[in-house]
Image 1: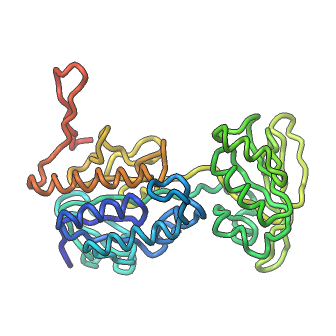
Image 2: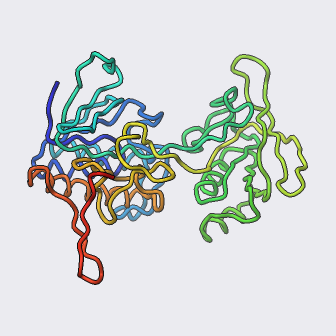
Image 3: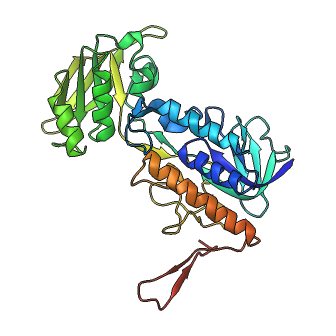
Length: 346
């Protein structure tokens, strides 16, 4: 069992930004990036993105995978120890906190590591719909990542479908249009939730079509081992009329679920499962445990906001450790008559 002052759990922009700041503060952080933790490759959701055009410092854009590789190298440059193992269990009941890895997680196994402070940056995962046939044709026609899978041969010059009405759905549909013969976006309601710019691009795209007030109800395909998806049953939300359409690919773009399994029941979560942090800080309900990135941010979910929250988490963890584990956020209210302190009992 090895002890560290601070451990970062995660591998996205929040995790690596936190590690960079902690390393420069000479706290010798350890970062567990995971081995396909929560089904996501090290680097997080950005590894499934092609061009990132809104991350400052890259006027010509940068590939998502390239951006995460640069962040990882920067973490290592300043001395972060990066371990490609998944933390499968953590005990936050007392300090030092205890952590186990997935290959040594038995009831009699000693913790792989202990730490005085932990930063949770585990991100979020794409949501599934659990349609009939989904399990059978998952990765044989169904995917939650167009960038990951859209270029594979089974989708080339074939009719493809996307479910969702936000920016992600619009972006995935236009990406898939490079490969499929056509792309149809199914939107449950009568309008898109996407930003005006993205909605206009989607509606104007010559290979993309949007079907409003429509949902998918079943995935149909070849009845053989490793058979491929061939059709999709869809239904109108207005009159319940059903039809079966040719579809060789179905891509989900219906939101994300925070990867909270590691801390569920130990730190306070909101109604959607995101880790609750004190406003304007990374402090969770457990002193010494900090959260950053998409696991605590359900509003913005951008690479830059994730990185920014990672900076906040590192600075607050550094202060927490410097003050012997007693640092708490103090936020003055507008009247100036009172101050707010985190409540360890939450």
